[in-house]
Amino acid sequence: MIETTTRRTVLKHAILGGLAAAPLAMPAIVRAQGTSKPVRIGLLSDLNGPYREVGGLGNHMATEMAIADFGGSVLDRPIELLQADDQNKPDVAAALARQWADDGVDVLADGAASSSGLAIQQIAREKKRIYLITGPSTSDMTGKQCSPYGVHWSYDTYALATGTGRATTKAGGDSWYFITADYAFGYALERDSMNAVKAAGGRVLGSVRAPLGTADFSSYLVQARASGAKVIGLANAGTDAQNCVKQAAEFGLTQDGTKLATLLFQISDVVSLGQKTCEGLVFTDSFYWDMNDASRAWAKRYMARMKTPPGILHAGSYAAATHWLKAVKAAGTTDSDAVVARMKATPVNDFYNTDVKIREDGRVLHKMFLWQVKPASEAKYAFDFCRELTSLSGDEAFRPLADGGCPLVKV
Image (cartoon, rainbow, N blue to C red; front, top):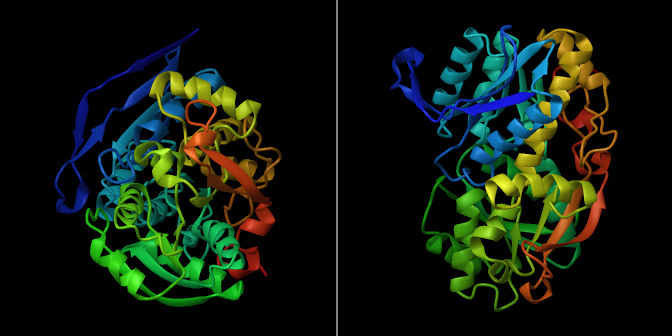
């Protein structure tokens, strides 16, 4: 029998290097009966910023579900789940990751913003901790900044660009202007999208960068419209992407035929903005809650607790934790070298992945889908938002192994 306890206290851990103390929000414990030293999973998340809806507490819930489904223990040890707010700040993320590794946390996960994720990856490499990358999307995670301990789930900027950028360009959107989040994720998504557009025969007319957490995108949208581009590519995410879409609709930006390309859009964005505002938008994803019977059954369990449908990062958090726990059990140890070898040698199987390979650079080769938000008038039930346009195999969607520049890859 599994007992689940969530302690809703806020702990404060001193941060090394003279930084202010950072809060650890909702360190939750899911543990089976027993007195052995727990196996600990640590989520470094955005709990209060622009990515709180797409990840945040939803990632905590999804990981909690994975632990419960696994039985609450592994190697006859209870499983403990911690979650901290890394505030999308690389220095805070790195300090927390280092402290947790020193305190014996067995595996790190999530990461939220790509800049924070890259900082966590560096600490995980140094401390020899597996890092289950489910929040950050930069393809650099498995490129020049890859790690023997980093495993990248859910998506990356290359796959997002390949799906949405290529499809939109081939459909006639052959001139682009980008509104880009001004940090590592935005740069990578813009770069990969520009490459995809050019490879499909399109042109890039320009770009503008907006700080993370920008509330007013009017000046950026005006610049984009003035460029004369057929497509405005939104190389941002979370509330930034929501504000762009909402303000573009308010300005009537697309009434002249200009298209919005949401390069990282998720189901929570449609929930926040409303289906009517999002009608016709196209986005790339490896998961949609209503894609098959298994995803619907899992989503029903998730929604019973969280009330809104799960997105790609929530599904990815479940898949990552489940696969790591299976590998720990199979390896008979939590030793990172043994476990990551087992993870890469074993296909990923869960409620939305079937025999999915993990490459030597750490890239999980999910099948990717191109979705379109259908008219609200066509919705048959709550959260019936999307239709599938096409799909790409993992080998088609993600960057070829030889092109990433990962030092672990011998070519």
